[in-house]
Amino acid sequence: MTFTVTVQPSGRTFTVERDEAILQAAIRQGIGLPYGCKDGACGSCKSRLLEGRVIHGAHQHKALSVEEEEAGFTLTCCAAAQTDVVIEARTVAGAGEFPVRKMPSRVSTIRKPAPDVAVVMMQLPANDPLRYHAGQYIEFILRDGSRRSYSMASAPHTQGDKPMIELHIRHMPGGKFTDQVFSTMKEKDILRMEGPFGSFFLREDSDKPMVLLASGTGFAPIKAIIEEMEFKGITRPAVLYWGCRSKADLYLHDWAVEATSRLPNLTYVPVLSEPKPEDQWMGRTGFVHRAVMHDLPDLSGHQVYACGAPVMVESAQADFVQTCGLPEDEFLADSFTSEADKHGG
Image (tube, rainbow, N blue to C red):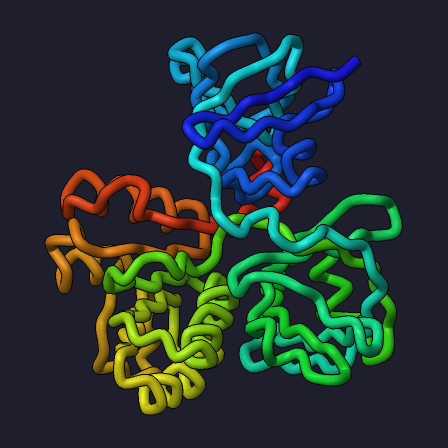
């Protein structure tokens, strides 16, 4: 049994199987809907249900509250159509452009620029680069079928003849995958991956000045976007705000400084929330999104790309829109939901 999904205002249509999530069907058919975690945790795929009936699978209250559901909103990542449906969602140009593929990948190098951060270079099949937008992510498929998502930290053009992608992996103690990365994983290990996923990438049809806002390893997709801007000669003004706890957590600080010397349109503002005495930190302190609000009290003409911990992304979105006048649809985010976040733990 299949149903038809119509997306307004674009008028795009696609089919969905009876118990299939609307988003899953859209990805399968190359329809670009906005989304992040695919797991009912981040709310990026929230859309308005204009006609028809859906049943929601498990999701978090903060992603879609009972009140929002009663008001006609739906999460496409965990909504299964029970009839033909019409949803209102902005289609994301380019989100479905590249086919989602499963492929083997081999660990090429593992480097630890901070005690709890690994920069892992993954080698892909020879002469077969992964097609993706800077800012998108892949999923590792673990032996038990569970998945872990990581953003590419390198722009697509950097893959070369022996295609490689760079990933930044933070150690979550007790984490099924990251414990392995920080203990037993070694060069030449083979991992299965699937991608690209996500609607977090540079909107090249805009010439608005950009705020690139990262916390922790949320810096990974932002780094890829900066590399892409340099490669394509994009000269829109951009300010990178990178928030971490202490100086050691700014694990690619030198890279960011060097990027500003090559890109006259890029400014870099590191912000530490808990600098240590030995850091002798003379820079900005506090919450990273507050630093943005201090420097740019009027964001009405800006576009924001935010990536990192859910609490940072949610605070930034609320405060930028309510206090700084940022248009809601100019806040583009990738919330780094961990397994604990996804399951309310």
